[in-house]
Amino acid sequence: MSAALIIIDLIEDLAGPKGRANHCREQIVTREVITRVNAAAAYARVRKIPVIWLRTGFADDYHDIPRHSPLFIQLKHIGALRLSHGGCHWLAGLEVQTEDLRLEKKGLSAFAGNNLLAWLQQHRCHHLLLAGISTPLAIESTARQAHDAGLQVTVLQDLCAASTEEIHQQSLETLQNLGEVMRSQAWMKE
Image 1 (cartoon, rainbow, N blue to C red):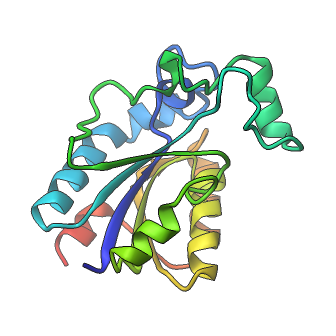
Image 2 (image 1 turned 90 degrees about the vertical axis):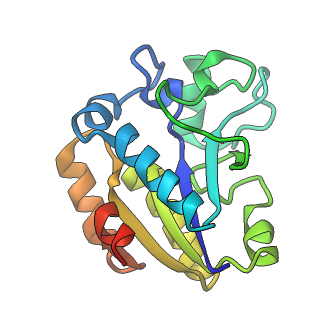
């Protein structure tokens, strides 16, 4: 096994219609991200590529929040990203399967506060296919950390979103320095 599909932060608080910090919601809908993610995940499963869903989430008292992060402190103030609440549920319409790996993370990167890197090494996955939100935060952070860990990175651009299309495109330009950027349909035709 050499690749893994990593899907990041497609949860209610960050992209749901009533999410407390759903700045990417409009782009998720406009770009049809949920439909495209489901198609890519189904393709990966058929090809025996692990599908790994990650969500940012914290304890109700936020004792596990990054203490000096302005972003996470603001999310704490609005009561977002508590694992015991509905804001950390996967977005309606996502087809998360029982055989998929589901992990929590404690920061921007998919690697923050969990054993994702060890799992990838144990299962000999050295190529990450990235999807989710937000492109300039979680996707870039994950791509940087994966790049520095010696992993191959591919960003599936149509499976990602930011608060605006302009910000998404700017982030994709940066991401080209860390790996390949391509559409999911192109990946599924390889």
